[in-house]
Length: 65
Image (cartoon, rainbow, N blue to C red; front, top):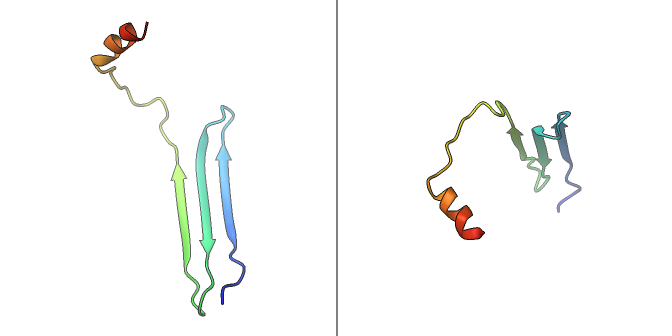
């Protein structure tokens, strides 16, 4: 028999509205076993990566107009 399954989560958002960290923990009670799953997401080094535009971007823009 399953009982209530607690879920805890934390969301950290900076002043610019960027999610810096998200964590959720789920505990499942079933047959006297208590497995817990934790999922974490973290955003770091925003704007520290430089990516060149692919060659096809200008062609796609011209075709869109």
